[in-house]
Amino acid sequence: IHIYRLSLYIYVYSATIFLMDNPFERNFWIWSVFIGTIFFVSGQICLRQSFEVSSIGKLGSLYTAACFSIMIGILGAISLLSLSIYEPIRTKQFFQDPARSGFPFLAGLFFFIGNSFWIYSISSKNPLGMIRILMAGWEMFLLLLVGLFIFRDKFQWLQIIGTILIFSGISTIVYSHS
Image (cartoon, rainbow, N blue to C red; front, side, top):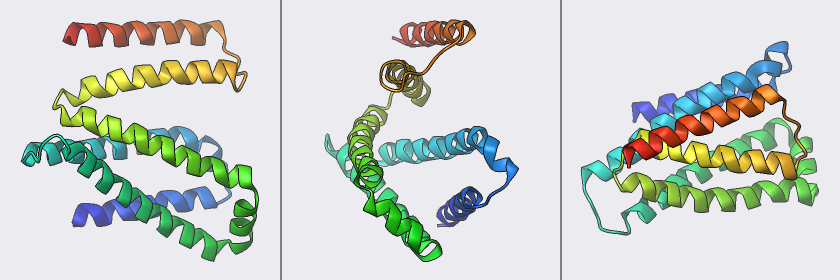
């Protein structure tokens, strides 16, 4: 129970940083990656522990994915309620624009499906590091293509060389494991 309270306090504190206008916010995206990663790793530990305790068969990952998603939904509802109290006009404006408010719901659908497969991979009890390395590599490749072809991102040669080195490292680690 204490870890849930601590996580909720940190979540609320992190969310309030985004509401403040200050110079720190400009570079907070870098810190938010590190902070988010700590929470993702903590979540993966909890998910893996849920499969270490006892098995309820092949559907265990679906039950776990459902509970996982319910918690995200509860926290999302609390956040939306807080925002609607704190900034009711902006909340109304947000939901009046179908494109702005529709894409997050569509993203939620995709994330739910993706999280269900990700949780299934954790239930396989393969090493968490290998699961995450493979997932991060595949995700990086897909996002690179999305950036190039959909958002028209421009990359410099040093970034391309770095990306190739990262792919080489991921391939080496994954293939040495299998």
